[in-house]
Each structure stands twice: as structure tokens, then as C-alpha cells.
Length: 517
Image (cartoon, rainbow, N blue to C red):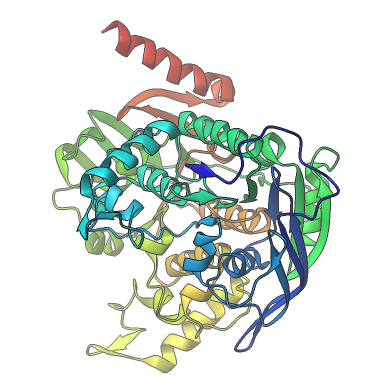
């Protein structure tokens, strides 16, 4: 990690900011993504970009990173006017982005990814040993539990996130851009990241931080810039603005209640799992059940096995032992196709990689899980007119903006991508729903819509399982809550016992038992 400055002297408030954008506009065919946006970031400052999905945050950081040029407006960095900026030039002058969608090559190792495009050589020979040593030094400096020799496609998402952060910090860093960096990290890894951020700030590095998590904004931010519909709404001092003011500026309306009141009417057992263990060892000897008419929550830190549990129930993760019973029928061969036909839907946490075909239109993404049904095809031929007439109203119900089902999903914000996933559940008759991190990477307004969707499902009698690393979310939504730790059920909480303190106590007690053993 090579920051541009090492002085801890307070920054000169009268000097020109490190980054200055004035009147930046960006147009795409048929879309005004940024409209006359101003932004400045000072050296040694953490500046939060805050806004709904689709507000222009991603477009803005892509302009700053050199991914594409602004249509109009000025861009100054380090006192110099920037023109014809490319990602390579941006990195060369010290602009290092860490995007929500990773830029790693899956078939390469961590160290190969770190040095991709900036390989070191001696006398015309690749200096593999030197790069390996530098990769180890950097990873140790960051405090990450990451093997430089590991292939990226063998890593879980949390470790891929670590690799992406390490890649951004390999060279000379003057401006670091972090887009939802903690979405896949454990509490411990998040703490290390926060320590790293404090160290970079003290060294004069400017930081642009994109997050929807109020606790992170409170812990880290110096200033907050709110974007809405591609426009700069306001820049505020983080120490004086309230959470409710930020949300109102972001959405343009007051959101009084984030979590809806849900009426649970528990009925028959829809899912019963006994002594379940996955082939990869992430889930071991788990007993679990979920009833129709209620939300069953699963809480735990990243890597505890909670995601693998619902993936095994759906038929994605191979099962080594144990059984899964759906509506009283023990299923011997689990796979996603048969699960769909049994009325089970799964919503993955990583929508971009596992959930959606980003290059294909919304219409195809919504209908793809229902093409075996007669209303979408006849004798194997897709009925396009029927498909459009069925998918259009579904996305209108989910308030897709803009309401164009022929747009490629890759052009959508995180919130709209999640709506496409939800639309897929409405394209066929389903009554068991498995949500893995349903609100990851989406803004407050989109969260409210997702929670309302879940409320409608459960009040209509569906069995809903919500897996979440966000304790306030899973506590507020669930009727019963399982707590997982290192692949096992650490606790089952119900009623008044469902508190944040009891969840955290379950973690610590399980840690103590493991150490004692």
C-alpha cells in the first residue's frame, strides 16, 4: 500500500480539494444518468455518496474512475484538469476504485489478479517471486485472512472482496473509491477495514464511500453528498445531519416505518430438515423447519453456513447426509429445476453472478424460470406476445423504473435488479420462498418495497425463509429465528427472546464451547 503522503498534519482547509467535479452531466442513449452534478473530495476526507439505486452514484464513480467520459462538465484532480481519462490512467495518477461488481479474473490466483496489467519483470523475465512477496506483504499489512496463491473462483465472496480491496491498494493511492465494501465482510473483517480507512485518512488519502448502511455512515463519514435522479441534492456535514433527514433527501419523501407490521399465521410445516450436512462441510448436523404463514429467519456472520443451508434446501449445494422434506414429502434428489416445479423459489445474495443474465432483457430474466409452463410456450416455442403481456403487468406491480421490460438487466440499479428477481417469483405459482440477503446492495426505498413484497407473500400463506447478516432486518421480519455459527445451529429464538443481545450471546457462547472442547 503506497499512499501519496505520509504526513499526519491536519489538511489545509484553504487548499483546492483533491477532486473537484463541476457541472458534470452524463447521457446514455435515452437516459440522462447525471444532470449537472458538483462534487468535491478533500485529501484526508471520507466523503459518502448517498442515494437510491438509480440515483447516479455508480455512473458518477465510473466517470471518476475513467470507465467512461462525462458528456459535459469539468473534472479536476490534484489541481489538474482531467481529459480523456481511462481506467489505466486513473490508476496511474492514484485513483483506485473497488466496485460492488468485482473486476477479478476467476481463473487466476489472488496474486495474479493483484498484478494483472502491472506485472513486474527483471531483465525481461517475469518476477514471479517478487510479486508473490509483495502480495504477501500487502495482505499481511491489511490484516486479511487471504491466501495469495488461491484461485479466485475457489474463494467465497467475502475473500473475493478482500482481494478486490487489496488490488486497489497495491499501487500509489491518492483517492480510494469503495462501493458497498462491507456487504460481504464479517464484523471482524469490517473492523479491520475501518482501521485501514482511518490509517489512509491520516496519510492524506481521500476516500469516496458508497453505502446504504447508516451505522457505517455514522462511524466513518466527514461529509455526505445526496444524489437523486442523477442530480446533486445537497452536501452535508455528517456530524450534524440526522438519519431521517438523509433518508428524506434521498427519496424525496418521508419513510416513517422501514419494517412493516406482518401478521404471521403459522400453519403446516413446509420445510423440514434433519441432520443435514453439505458436502463442503459448511453445514453440519442441522435440524431446521419452516412453516407456511410465517417468516423463519436465519442469522449469523458471513461464512457461518446460513447461505449454504438454503442453497442445499433448493438443490444447489450437494448434500452429504441428512434429509430435506417439503410439505411432508422427503425429497431424495434435489436440484433447482425440480425445486421450482415443487413451488420453491430461491433468491441468491449475488444477483449479478447467480441470479440474472445481465446482457438479456428484463422480460427474459423474469420469464426464464417459467418457460416450461404452457402460458409461456407452445410445443417448445416461446410465445413472445403472451410473454410480454404476462411480464409487463408483473413489473408494473413491482414499480420497475423506468417501466421498460426490454432493457438489459445489466443497465439496472441494484434495487431494480432485485425487483426483476422478485418478478420471477410472480411468473409462476410458488409457495415456498428462500431469500438470501434480500436487501444487500439496495437503498432504503427499495428495501421498503422488498419488505412489503415479503409481507404480502407470508400473509397470503406462503412459507418464507429470510437469511440475513443484518440483525435489525432479520429480527424485525422473523416470527422465529435460527442463529447459525460455524455450520451449526447455535440457538432457536422465539417471541420475547428474539433480541439482538440474545443473538450476539449465542455467537459468544458457541465460541466459548468450541474453545473449551
